[in-house]
Length: 151
Ligand code: HEM
Image (cartoon, rainbow, N blue to C red; front, top):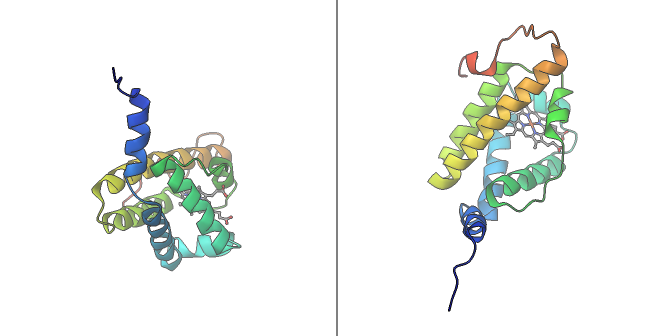
């Protein structure tokens, strides 16, 4: 008698099926080209990123892990962003606006939905950890991420 595979097998399969590795690479490269070109975010990336090939390769691993379950990324983005200078909720909103426009342009609804909701969740976490590091008394001069105007 044939038994059905355990349910986690289906979960893992559907996760890799959301998009291809080529789509992850396209998403990351298109998004960071727009971010580098952006009046608000461009200067931050220009100041902080020393090696763009490395940054893009890291971010492809990061998104491949989140969207395809490949588990290639082992970094610490919370700590890295918390150490940056002068980030604001407006910048995170702008980051999200560009990211949402990029996922929309890809023509893959499953990828768009999954990537957008993950990005929003992580952006909120990154902002919270940045604010805790820079404004320990919880007196942020810029308020919460969700209060910032959409850029
Ligand atoms: C205001 C918004 C943001 C800015 C200005 C920003 C900027 C940066 C910069 C400058 C780096 C360092 C690159 C390097 O040293 O080569 C970095 C790394 C990274 N960022 Fe962001 N970021 C933002 C939001 C986000 C969001 C929302 C995510 C995820 C959804 C994200 C994910 C990452 C990851 C995974 C890394 C790599 C960390 C590592 O090296 O392990 N970032 N970001």
